[in-house]
Length: 332
Image (spheres, rainbow, N blue to C red):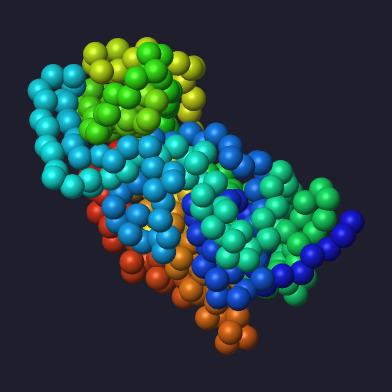
């Protein structure tokens, strides 16, 4: 088995991992970015990119944009409707296939070595430096970033786990079949139909991504709610595929997201807004904060990633904790 030695190995090439890889490679660090998939690959996500998110990136994301969003419509248990519009876009929608591929290619162009179709077995922390183990070769690094999502294998290897109850989202695509351009520029949200949950509809260039979400114990209610919501609006075409589900991880304030030379970003760190389900901004920003802390540590010759956790606690967690207090998490 061959070995590769670099400054940083990043496991997971979603928005968090690719952003961290881009930032570190741009600063001259040697970086390997691993993902078990071959890109572009499908990824379940409503695909909302806020203007704050777009502005946080140092490059143009327009090649991945599906729709510019000017309006939002809320319903209360399929009843009362409240709508608002803006003169300028306040959000974009994307498909994660295009968006994640764009971010990964930006990391590659910045100098990161991207290895697709590589499944990580775990991280060996028994030696002086961490080793990312895969079936084909081992990757030695000064620092390992776990950007491998909910149920992170890197987190388990490093003894890091999230203590809160996860949320669950169920989603399916409703695609147009008439070939026309429908110019949808509004997102739709339904509240109050099931406890702690809601439904959403995000327009894309060829249809709508429609989903429902709630805390995990209410998973059994989500399929029926999704069917009802998907058939509640004449703007929505018929469902085009079977519903698919995924976990929305949530970090409690006391949950550790680093251990020695290993740290977690994005969904692997539970950085998800429990009110809206928004995760892309926190993935990207945590990737940037991780890159800053790692670069400073490596330049100083002292691996101290506690600075990363403190930056997350001071910059990202106040907003997430506020959302948690009114969102669908039952935890205190």
